[in-house]
Image 1 (cartoon, rainbow, N blue to C red):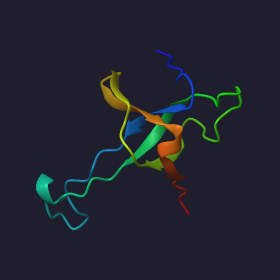
Image 2 (image 1 turned 90 degrees about the vertical axis):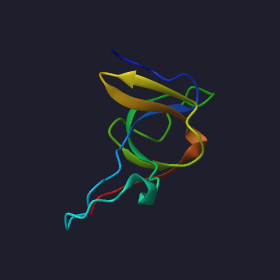
Image 3 (image 1 turned 90 degrees about the horizontal axis):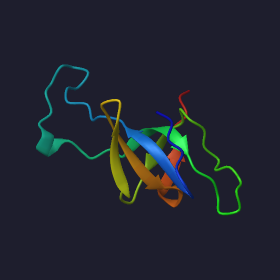
Length: 92
């Protein structure tokens, strides 16, 4: 299925929180911090038709609230307004 967000929206696959530390210690859900991080699945355009400065596969941090949630191929995905994208994550 191909999904193309309309307007200044980005479709993001939410990255799951880690439940166990690298040392093997289980972290209960009540103690886990909500990490708003995801992978870009699809990107809309600016109002004037120009491309948003994101590409599919970018790892991003986002704030605000998702506008809508959908399930694609059994994966939870979120529509987020472009203005709520805080940063891209670059691995060194």
